[in-house]
Length: 247
Image (cartoon, rainbow, N blue to C red):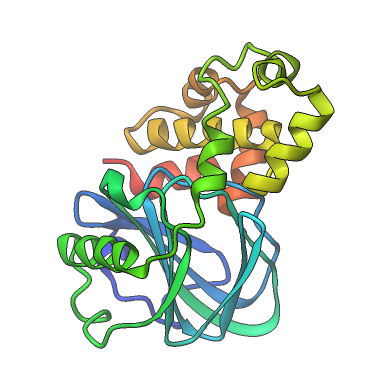
């Protein structure tokens, strides 16, 4: 386990890269510090993501909605919501992502921004933060995720089915289905499939699979194919991620 996983984020410790690690046994974290960052590609997580901005601001697209999170605020993204982090340029920023277990009830909520609780910096234990994030989502009353959920439910686990076949089950042309899916989910069907494979690879890497093994089992052509998409979505190589978070 990396010693940085249990350290409080601070500008001196973090460099201008994503630093992944673990906070306890069940929660992954990622720290960003710097004044320049390329955007990350569309992806989603199988956990609730919270992004606490400590210095500066972060910009996102959550499905089709632009979101800005300022210092002193936390963005809560429900599991399964496609999103992308936009780039940072000449804007000193320090932020912390936590990836939290969730209940099924939290899945159909929309992304929300809330003030950072006073207790947050000193009491980031897994159970407390997870319970707080789920309770906050459930109380928000924002249920804008239904259109996203409807779109992603059309994508069968069998990735050998081509998009034309999936479209025909809804009585749409291939082009019409792609437009409908992107309008509702914020991403194309192909991008959603890539993100789903990335989550599979990420899970395998966290349980100590080698990058080549994770690439093959997740459906990527080879290790370099996985590496390209992994860096674009998560900001690090599969090998660096594996070393930081493996159990």
